[in-house]
Each structure stands twice: as C-alpha cells, then as structure tokens.
Image (tube, rainbow over all chains, first blue to last red; front, side, top):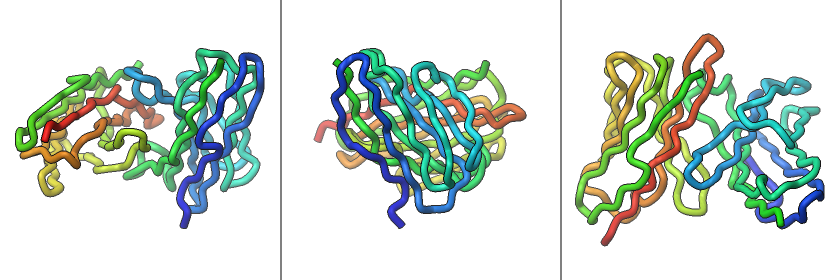
Length: 115
Length: 111
C-alpha cells in the first residue's frame, strides 16, 4: 500500500491564483482530513470528510473548498490564493472517525508559498 | 470550546538527559493520541491512551493519561539524537469526538 499520497510536494503561487492540492489514499479509509501547519500554531483542521459525498468545515475553512467524489481522493482547492495561505498542508485519513480510532495516517505534506 | 495546551514549546537537552512534554485540556477527553514529527517530515502516530490513569511504555518512552482524563504526558528517558523532532498530542472529546491538537513541543538533542 502507498498509504496517503499528496501532490505536489512544493508549490509557489502568486496572489490571486487558484490551485488544487491532491490527496489520495489506498487503505479504503472512510475518513479524510486536511490540516495546515504554521510555525507555533500546530496543526489546524481545514476541512474533513466522513465518506464519499460528505464534507464539513473544520477550524479554518475560509478560502478553501473540498469535495469527495470517491473514497480514495480528497482534493483541497484554493480559490484565490493569499499570502496568509503560505503553509504546509497535510492530508490525513483513518478507518474510523478521528477520535475513535487509534491513529490518523498523514501524507508527506505540500509546502505552499504564496507571493 | 475544547482547547489543548502543550508545554513546553521548545526543549533543548544534552544527549542522555530526560525529556518530558505535557498536555492539558480545558475539557475531559475521551482519549488522547501522541504523534512525532521529524524535521521536514509528517506526523507519525506513536500511541493512544484511553483509560483514566493509563500508563503505556514504548522502550524509552512513557506515556501517561491523568486520572481526570484532562492531562497527559510523554516522558523520554536518556534522550538520543534520534529523538529529535516535534511531539504533538491530539485530544478527542465531546459527543462528536472533536479532535484538537496541541501546538507541539520541539525537542533538540545536543550530542
């Protein structure tokens, strides 16, 4: 199993550009989440999904959209990039609801810079 | 809302010294998870604690969950340079099992 994969690994955008961060998992996990990590802020939940077709907002959802058309994929869309969205983005998945499981599996991350 | 405070933010030790990081929740937790993130890497699950007063050990790492299930600690005995990284706690609580991460403790080890 590849586990949780994310692409791209690095990305530089200009303010106002849009892009999609890709996340895929091959473990047949129902639950997937997107986090951003900023220095001194820890991991903050952006959006999450409890299954195909179902998504919900986390702690910091503004400026981001998600969709979950398949169990495997959970892309994160930046609609109009802003410098405040410069961060490291992690996708995670788990078999049972986060908090009821013994682990979330994290992808390798996407390092995004918005100029 | 649920908040999880983690201290210290940074800890620098000499190799061989012990290290402890603490997490304190504003609400009673259902369970707590600990993760390690190496520099430039992603969080990797270490352990889950569920029971009040639970203590678990993994080689030189000892994890504790408080009796009131509002605090937890990770203790590393005789640190090694391979222990370098950021240690996060992740608390789960409430009827909806809301997850909250602590901000992490960055451990550096001087050889």
